[in-house]
Length: 438
Image (cartoon, rainbow, N blue to C red; front, top):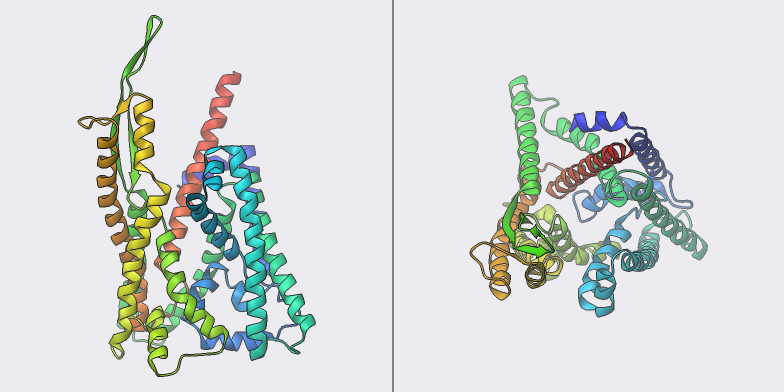
């Protein structure tokens, strides 16, 4: 990995792309520190500290602390991520979207344009909801319509700028721009999280206890990272044989290849879906200043908050954990079903003269792929659950308050691997160009 980066800096074109990406990320981090005009920063800092470990913890992590600071980039890339997921789902539900998806570059541009419009609309709705809800609780030095409008415009513009920066990185930098912005936001929170762990479990303890606690923390982090790497790289390769065709006096085809079925086909999407579904009612109640009380409503909201899971004093809240695990598995199957169509793959193989050894073309091939995919999805879903639950377990049992968790590590490892692969492919393409020019 390090050698890939070193070799990339030796090539001027790729070096310029990396430098451009770094400069854009500096802009993102600077914008995350500029406060939104007209707000009471002390109020929001106090409010956030009271709700640490709640539904807003992960939200603050993916925004790189800009939400906690209520900066001009407070919404960051969250509206874009949500809109991208919405467009992906609409691609299956709306025939016109599906047609654009199959058109290639022209169709992709249309879908990107729709994603942009939805992003701006979501940013407007989210910023308006936050401005009114927090404004009533003391967010502004003076709660007026002008301050609300100014906040809505600022946060919406900030989210739009982040989207623009992400697209420019994709075009002129390295990797997927939105993913790069997301990973730098998460990484920016790691020093403070590690510092919190050090103060909580190491500082002020006896030497033997401090060393043991530090070793356990490091071992857990390394274990989760290794699991994530294995989960991201694991795949089942289905062999495919193409029959030979006679064209004139030559025989073409006949090569053997494979269909790579990734174990973690859906990536981190099932966890995001499950968290979003569980946390939405909690977030709404917190925005409205409603904690739910001690009645049935309060217990239901407590079940939905992961900060209450693995708390042995209130075991009933672990029902929420069981629901969360079931949702992750269900969304893993659902998302894979809309991104991978075994019947379409089988039909394309049949048209091109391809077949899986021992399996007849057509429907038998489709059924075989569906069966294999179901096994693989289950293994990937179980892996996702393990990676996601480990940090939640230590937060609930040992009260280890950290903003990053299994979800963040999956994102970090996945983006790093994909970015390095893209850099290697760009280096390979450049070598081919140089060979052809010679």
